[in-house]
Amino acid sequence: MTRPGRIPRALRPALASPGGKCYRHCDRPIRTRHLASRLPGTWQVRACPSGVVSVTSYAEWTRRDPTRAVHAVLRRWAVPSSLVRAWDLRLATRHGPELGRSAERFLAAARPKRVVRVVYWRVYPSRARDGTERRLFVCFRRRHPGPVFFVAPPTAETWGCPRCARRPNARDRPTR
Ligand SMILES: [Zn+2]
Ligand SMILES: [Zn+2]
Image: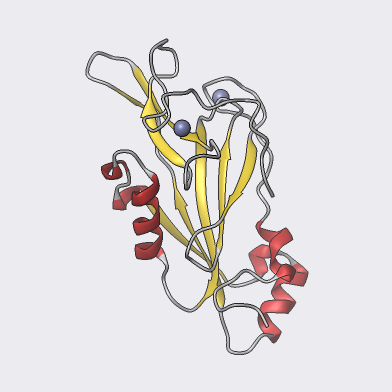
């Protein structure tokens, strides 16, 4: 039996992240990091080796709309929590056909009927008042209880993670 909400194995390949390169920052390959939370579904954070985030997503096999719960978890991970704004969260509903033939068959046969809901959190690059570019970063250092999301100017010399003061590190290995 799978835990309610959990993404079953049969659906995981359909939700795997595409590759891609870090847009308008370093052009290096994006890596996907899978995270756990108190929610039953699956988190994916897509970021470049320097920690610039392209998108964070949460997928759940469910009948409910998980957006509010996702918002609450992200607010605990972000510094400051006001970084997570409701209008940056977007809900997508996947009924099957768009996930591929085997996922579609799986969803059609499962009872009770559920869909895959994916909540995307995307923070676009912005400019501070003085014109400095600001990007969303994530720090995955092991001593943090969860990921630390924050905004920083990627070109400045002085910034670091607000919790550990270090820059997100390319040596950190992604976990699966
Ligand atoms: Zn980058
Ligand atoms: Zn940190």
